[in-house]
Length: 173
Image (cartoon, rainbow, N blue to C red; front, side, top):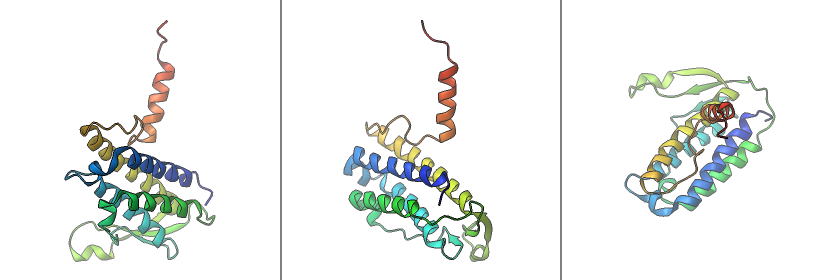
């Protein structure tokens, strides 16, 4: 896939690998831990990749593998594998139509609730969703005295705004 959204998603996943390397097993497994966030992120990417061949992505058909919440080495490997799979996607048109499912309630009726989307739109969603969970991971890490970097868990639009603001600020000289 030659979309800019692929490298952006791979870059965000690389940030996750770096964060795992920085924050260690204790925080990953703590009662208010980062493990469930990493697992949740991976579940969404895996649903996306699994659904692409049929053109039907069901974000509720998550694996919810408990090992991805408790084993940072396995989670790290899974992040790298998802990134590799994303980078190897075949070229398709950016507006290729697909169907997406996410339950809108706990009622059984929502099982038939599919919406039209595009591959690019779903990649944008995945990136945003991941950054959102990274913000929560960063908060948990900071609470434990671990810094994951000032850009970790910050939306690209916020980073761009910060750059513009700094570029416009008067120099102190």
